[in-house]
Image (cartoon, rainbow, N blue to C red):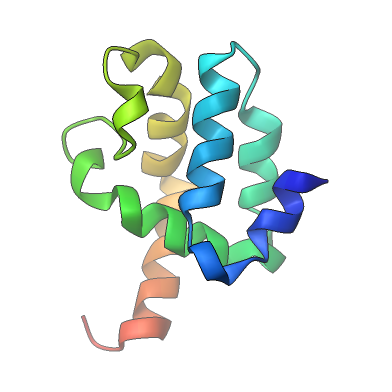
Length: 102
């Protein structure tokens, strides 16, 4: 419930989502259900914000949060999900809507 509340809290952008996913993954929890929730249509704004704070490091196969340092295996499922074709399609559509003719 707290994770879902943070999906709708725009005051911190995507950093709360990032903190949840990082903490869960580093604790050994399965992040896939949380990623599925993030990927739901009603959470598109949160998805785009989370993607955008990670977009530059994603090109190097990692995430932006410094707590991931030395934990490439823990972040791998999130990196793979963000780079997956379905998420890339959604993000592309959202960026087009937000920024226009990129």
